[in-house]
Length: 52
Figure 1 (tube, rainbow, N blue to C red):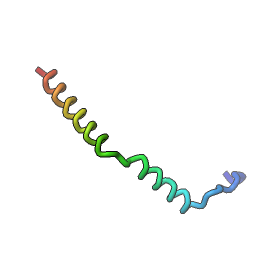
Figure 2: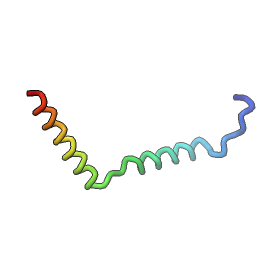
Figure 3: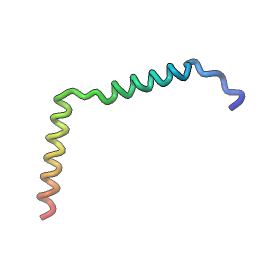
Figure 4: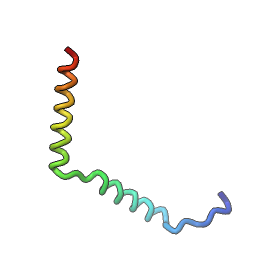
């Protein structure tokens, strides 16, 4: 640990990059949200019907 080379990015820069990555990762288009909701609804219906 003591002999590690210094980081090329400052802590504030690393934090900013992590936030930017998280925002890009979690941006969904409305179509994706709609299809996820429909898929979840179908999954719930199938689970309900399979319980009989």
